[in-house]
Image (cartoon, rainbow, N blue to C red):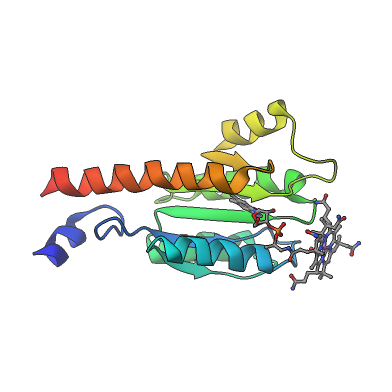
Length: 160
Ligand code: B12
C-alpha cells in the first residue's frame, strides 16, 4: 500500500524521506563541506547522492533528473560561488522537469565574508530557494529542512 502511494507522488517521497543531491560548482575542489552535508542529510533519514568536487552543471542536472530529486544542495567554499551561482541556477531552471526542484546554495560564496543582502536577494530572484552563507548557516538550513520535511509529510498524508 505504501509503495503504491509513493509511486503516485510526483517526486520520490516515502514517509518523510527526501531524495537529495549534494554537489558544488565546477571550479570547487573542496570535499569535506560536501561530506558534512551528506552526513547531516543522512542522519535526518534522507537519501543522498553526493556528486563530489568540481561538479559540472550538466552532471548536476542529469543526476537531479534521473533521481527525480526533491532537493539539490549546492555547497561552495572556494570564493567563486558568487560568480558561478547565477549561470548554474539559470541552467537548472531552464531544464524541463526541474521546475519543482528545491535548490539551495551555501558555504563561503565570496572572498569578502558573507554576501550582502542584495547579492543574496539576487540569487533568490534567479531561482535559488535559499542562500546560506552566514556563520549560522547550518542552523538556518536545518530549519529549512524541517519545513520541507513537514510539507512533504503533509502532501503524503493528504494524498492517501
Ligand atoms: C582543506 C582546504 C583546501 C584543500 C581541499 C582539500 C579537499 N579535498 O577538500 C585544498 C588544498 C585543495 C584547497 C584548495 C583551495 N582553497 Co581551500 N581551504 C581548505 C580549508 C583549510 C578547510 C576546508 C574544509 O575542509 N573545511 C571543513 C568543512 C566541513 O567546513 P566548510 O568547508 O567551512 O563548510 C562548513 C560551512 O562553510 C557550511 N557550509 C558549506 N557549504 C554549505 C552549504 C549549505 C547549503 C549550508 C547550509 C552550509 C554550508 O557548513 C560546513 C560545516 O560547518 C579552508 C579554510 C578553513 N579553515 O575553512 C580553505 C579555504 C576554503 N580555501 C580557500 C581557498 C582560497 C582555496 C584556493 C583558491 C587556494 C589557492 N589559491 O589555490 C584553492 C581552491 C581550489 C579549488 N579549485 O576549489 C579559502 C576560501 C576563501 C573564501 N571563500 O573566502 C579558505 C576559506 C581559506 C582561507 N581562509 O582563505 N583548500
